[in-house]
Image (cartoon, rainbow, N blue to C red):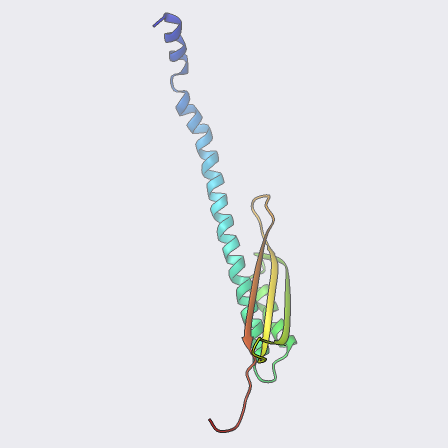
Length: 138
């Protein structure tokens, strides 16, 4: 081995430690932000599902209305979803299923707050039969 080769190796000593001290915290910070974004996204999905379910539950009871369902969904959006969801949209409607039974369906679509420059949206779809009271035999 020549003297020149030894001199080059000596000049590079400790460079890995220097690189790690610079890049390590940067990667750790990016990892923490990504985990926080995942938590925010999952929480947004939970809030959207909760709003859809509560809207359907309020509208499907006897004498239930679309307005009652929208009021329940808005309570969720204004409570749990205030800081997580932006521009939440609720579509709530009565209809019939494949067997001809009356149902209520709620669809929620909303943007989730993003820590990274990535647009994220959540979607929730919930459907349940309308409660019907009947008097009669078996």
